[in-house]
Image (cartoon, rainbow, N blue to C red; front, side):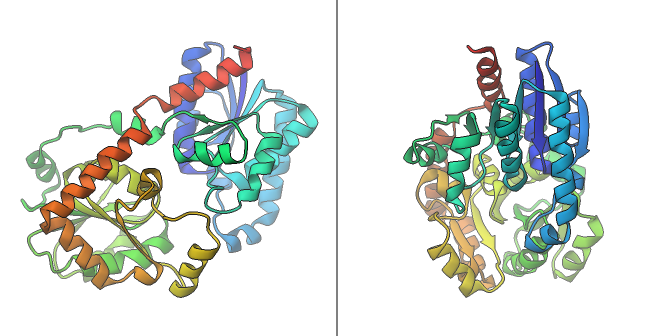
Length: 379
């Protein structure tokens, strides 16, 4: 059968590649055509356009590149018409993908499956109407999304979270601490891990304050998890201004977390990864116009938390220091509790264990592939 996939970001490329692998296990004659990246291309098929030509984030970049976005969408629609797939699989990337879903259902009547639901539960809840109208199967990776969609009388599938799969398949599991520090020439001190974000603006806003908050913990060493696509020199300005020795490692985030005593983490997928690796954490996220941002969170967003850990657990498991709560003093205070108050640490770790039960075990890609292939075959 013929599968057309659309992923517009690096994370979509990762999850799309794993989904393609699982589809091939169920359909030996699977033929792929896709918008994605290198990881999807490694699974075979035809890469129509790389996500690097599509990933415009934020209002200003979207406006500036509106002509390119429109051209990409137009060429994508034409390509789907020519290819005539048995199913179109959309992976997150809602601004682009919802337009494609509408076109496919109105003009081609090809089944549309959405893998990794956009975060409409946080805002733009009105988009659920479009999902119900143009998306045949919605495959969710966050357990609370099922109840959210049920409220709108929209049947969805919870297939598990692909982060669990990534952690289960990671290298260097059960790595001894001495082996890790020896490979990178590190001190024999416990580690504070810093995950200041994946984009330059996030790092510029979060990292300096994270570093200052860590200064007083002289019995620990600080390791920064470098983000993919960010040049090493970018971190040097911050590392060089830190009074103590600080190390930046790239493509080793899971290894750093697995060895860390505690972590300072920006909001996003990294908070869930940190929790699943059982590392006590503080969620730190600086916003522009903190008072206005907090007002918007309280009155516009339809969510009580910003971190996936707390959203999945349905309660405050980790402290969220964002907007008006983001400060060096607050981060330092919370970090001190995580490092030195054993009862506080154990409470968080116990809550992590409860959260894991909601997330479920590995196999998200396989379960998603089963839903898609079985639906096409009418099984």
